[in-house]
Length: 461
Image: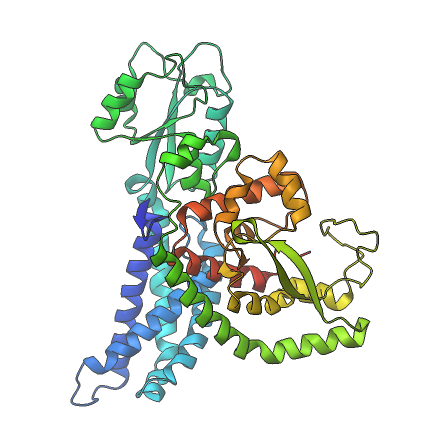
């Protein structure tokens, strides 16, 4: 993992992006130079802008189909199919963008050849990385300190990562009682922690011991490992990096107080507000026809009201009125008792089902963004009734109200629709990650992931 714009990114994924982008640029330049040998005295600069547009278009398409995440494919067959889809989509995007360039028509003639060559080159690149190079060169070797249930949970989390990302090398016990991991992976205490790290060539030690008082941890040995360049992570830090969430059950107030992140400076707020205003105005103009059709469909099926208004809890715990296209019957809560939507909820109309699946019902919230009550990206706002209940049952729940709620969020693109306290806990863990690490770069990542979620129809109820 490497840290860029305060976001932890896979080194392998960055390498693939860098090599892929360079390959696409070179391929397009080569095709152009061979396709049209003389342009402006054969000045190679004329190909530069076209090569950049082609590379960016293809990489954007890879992101939309999930090919920029390291380890998403471990077999060439499924990988080849997804690459074929993405390169074709990239060609379409590129064809549209070339219309904005002075030499656009000339560039468009080279798209088919460049696309075929890029598909072949990227298949070779991915095949090379899948051949074992990733595991041998980039995989982090992880030693877990502890052998209890937390250590077993860490092992399961490491197991969800591709071999190119991490390799579990063993468990070092701190007591002789708790044993929830395979005995053959437990390192004997006849050797010290430093010796175990050296023997296993571990690069990271994960402290999977929740109770750290009473001298249970070998602090002097951990310090020696740290001074020798071995990275030491506690449970919250490990889960934050690996899963993109902050586990509530292992979280302490001191970690939030003394840890990095949770920055709410004026510069970040200013950049976020400018981005919100610009994006909301553009999207409003683009989606006005869609909103008009949605309004007519609601009117024809179930009449008025077209817009559903509901009080939600926003920044600082203050309530505001959120706007949505009405997707439920007008008597959805005739008894006055708030309730979550469920799978196959009979209160949802036929038009409403489509609006929810495509997220069109959320478009009126662009006016909430313009009014400053919401942001494009942030935790989804909840009703005060549920906030009161969840705050009593879930620790640190109020932390999600330290940033503006959003049209979409980290929890929305990483977890399905929440309709229970257990779901709320899981979503809070993703929300805490966002509150701790939010940047404009992460907002853009979330928006790109949101496009994928909407296109695939995930999470809607």
